[in-house]
Image 1 (cartoon, rainbow, N blue to C red):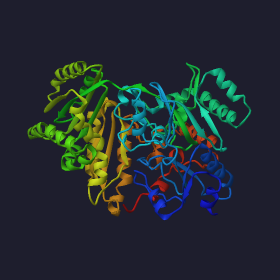
Image 2 (image 1 turned 90 degrees about the vertical axis):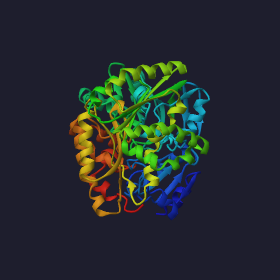
Image 3 (image 1 turned 180 degrees about the horizontal axis):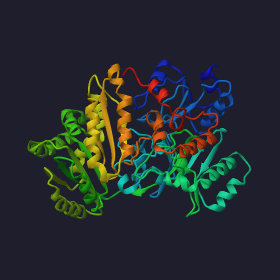
Image 4 (image 1 turned 135 degrees about the horizontal axis):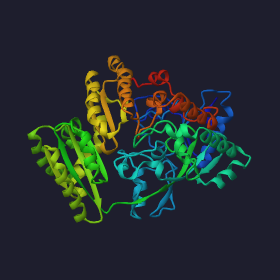
Length: 548
């Protein structure tokens, strides 16, 4: 089949099957590689409908046909790659509509940083943006159910999607939004394709309601599986299909538009920075910090700190020369503080308020209370400008690793674990022990208030001895995480790298319910196969990149 020719004849957008394009789209930010046959750049939802209809029509004749949606390719789980058709929305579907202080409608290809420019005109933001906010697309944020530094206060993306438009397996576009019981009944009685999906989903969730509710991970963040427990709420009588699709990684259908709720951007912000000599008292420290109700509670380790100092010149392009010089001058006192001993971890505790004085008072009060923990150094950066240097270190650590360390490459395979914060003082030394056991150079950073950590090893992946570490190291780390009642993903989702772990995360029956949902919405398995519920160790490890 001349796939490029067939698709070019049915859409208004572009189709590219060049070797250069296929090579570029064979990777995202993960450690996997899948070479697509063609890349489609749809001009509008109608093009996506046409592509899905085409694949559905010919799937029986060509089982290799499938489609994966992609916005900006920053996915770290391997969910934005495919060996058949990639639909890249970043060329044309980059528009935002109906922006107000409360909400905005956005297409999946728009970058978050451009979206924020528009929402800030009304003084508002989407607070669930990820650390890759300068690179990420809105489609990826919604489909991964992203969270980030502000999730402690505001929660994840599923809290902010009030409506979605999605192309489903029949090639038609449908609107999903919360429904009350009367609206749900009307939907299920339509007697059409959509009615069948709603009726079957409701029957599954209602029949096994208690078991499904009990299956929700007992942590503040989770991005694994399908969040069946959030779709149907007997107490409120609300049935919300967006909760199924947000975080589904395009495995049930393809998003064409989302309506996003917004929150006012805090007027003023400042950060209390604390250098920890050791992490023995984290179990006591975390609730003490949370008692002060910070807007954000982040951390990064000593490796991240040294990496930032080592590659300090890399920030010039990011900041501009004058701002970079100011940052370097600001870092001098912190450099002197290091003479007292290298900290194991640096804490960033951010407070917001309606005035500079209010922020200063919150920071000062927290510092006075927390000084009992005997930090080696504490710094009150009571404006956003003063604390920017630390937030850059936190946010840019992955990019520095990926771009500056020669001969070794980022290998995000234990990069998004969550454990109950109260147990971190027990957990983190064991985590470090596994990292040391496998001789991995890795940075550890994360959202301390949520117990969500990002561990990014640096490895020479071309070396078979290094590649052999992936499976045993991942299994040891994830088994440890689950033993502490945690989740193997808080933000980055399943994809190829964590899909096989769903069998450990959930009971066989709950995993079967998730697979029933996948089968219901995608019986031909045309949407992003080998991710989430149909991921396997054999397939995933077979497609680890061999060259960078």
